[in-house]
Image 1 (cartoon, one colour):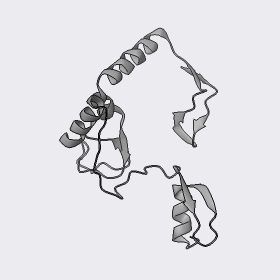
Image 2 (tube, one colour; image 1 turned 180 degrees about the vertical axis):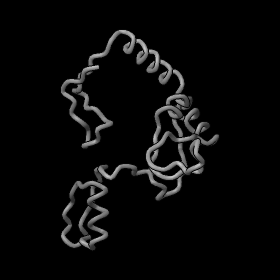
Image 3 (cartoon, one colour; image 1 turned 60 degrees about the vertical axis):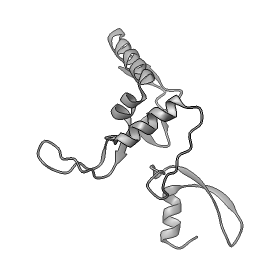
Image 4 (cartoon, one colour; image 1 turned 90 degrees about the vertical axis):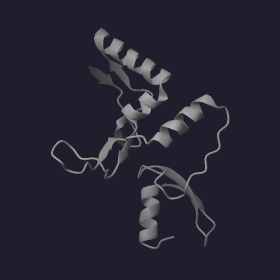
Length: 137
């Protein structure tokens, strides 16, 4: 496998830019095509195979240690039901709680307004967190 123009998105090595070119053999191309079709046909399969979270989980690895760090999410029944509903219905309203980690990446861009100066700026969540921690906001 050969990759050219491999520019990452938001400095994340796991996210290749739209301009990245990758050369694969026919067998790998066929495998990826089949996988894309599976994911397109079944959003639950896609979620259970590719959605990741960072943090601890209630599950244990084969040695009995708690799984931490980046890992595939295990969907609960209600999450699977919500994904199916969102795929089947045109309009869905979800009542979801606040502050439950919807902003997952330190590098996500947010817009903030300085109360004192009125200045509006786009900064990463990480920089925003540092400003709050250092009381610059």
